[in-house]
Length: 45
Length: 170
Image (cartoon, rainbow over all chains, first blue to last red; front, side, top):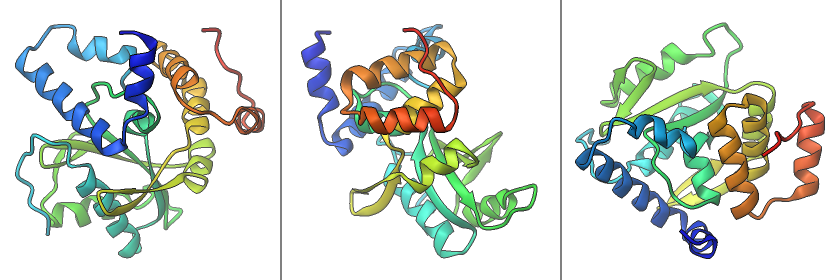
C-alpha cells in the first residue's frame, strides 16, 4: 500500500479504525492462515 | 450489567466503560488504554486480538488489587480465559502500571470514544515503551509511529532520557 494511503488511514477517526480492526479480525477468522498469529506481530501485539 | 453476547464489532466502549467503573468502585486509581489499540489511535488500523488496560492500583499490595478487579468484572458477566478477561468474547488484559507505564497512564491523552470518556497512551510513550521492550514487533511499531503519528519530538526525547532509553536502529 502506498504511504499516502496508509497516512490517510492513520488519520481516520478512532471509532472508524476500530471498526476496521474488527473487520480484519473477522477476515482472519474467515480465511485462517497458519501464520496469522505470527504475521500480526509485524505490526500487532 | 452489560450484555456479554459475542459481538462482531470490537466492544471497546464496553471495555472503557468497565475501566471507568473500576475507578468508581475504588478498585483502581487511574487507567489508560495501551498496547496495540493505543497505537491504532495514532496509526493505520491493523489486526490485534486483545485490549491492554494499564492501571494504577488503589492499593500497593503484591496483587495490585487484581483479584478484586477480576471479581468485580466477573460479577458483571465477564469471563476469565487464562490471563485475559473476556467481554463479548473479546480478550482484555488488565496490567498494573509502574515506572514508564505509570507515567504513561498519568500523562495519557483524554479522549471520548462513542460517548465514553477514556484515556489513551500518548504516542511518545508508546514509542518509549516499545523501545524498552525491544522485540521485532516493537521496532515495527516504532517505525510505524515515527512515519504516521504526529510525534512531539522534544517530548519523546525527554521521556527517553528520563527512562534511560534509546530508539533502536530501524
